[in-house]
Length: 154
Image (cartoon, rainbow, N blue to C red; front, side, top):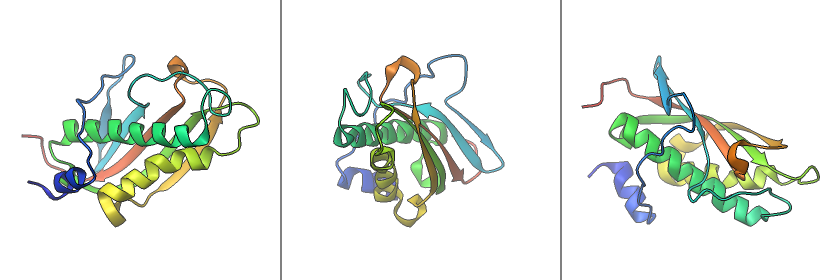
């Protein structure tokens, strides 16, 4: 068993099948050792805004679920999560009411999962934005960039 797979098991995380893109684009693109993962949202298709429909704590869990969705895409695209050299950049879009101010606490659900799974390689640069709306009224969408070892999926 691979190192990251063992860590996922220890964390009690079972990866789902990678979700399909919501429109005409790819789940990911790899260029010069960087894997750009398209925006993903939480599983279960929850709908609503932070600050009215959902609490910050619920948003944190949605961001964590989104991280698991991203891990599934990485595994599908790379064959093994051990090919991840580093989490480079995370950008979150929180579907929130205008007076909501805890976007950073919501995105911590994603960031902390990346650290739990990849340890120091999971520490990344990030930005988070409040959005008036996002596709399908999801509470959060995250896009991300990973440094990966270059080899073909076998």
